[in-house]
Figure (cartoon, rainbow, N blue to C red):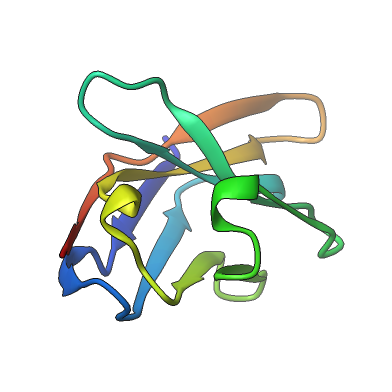
Length: 120
């Protein structure tokens, strides 16, 4: 069984910074694309930042130039550095990963989510 565990969420004031981490564990053959998603109450889940295995990135317009996604393949860890936070960034942030459990099989996994609250 593969598990993704997020950490680093909490309460921060507008303009502040926060760094999220996501650690993958279990019977992993390879980790391919990884991404951060977020979902506020009553809203749809949206992709925030994506990073491929080779390091190519894509960001949502709402957080462009404020957030930076990175990964450490040796540590099987995904990061999201969030700067200049706004109240609109308040949401549950989820870690997502496409993970091969063997050469033949790839599945999509989600973490449990971590709450980020940005106060005015």
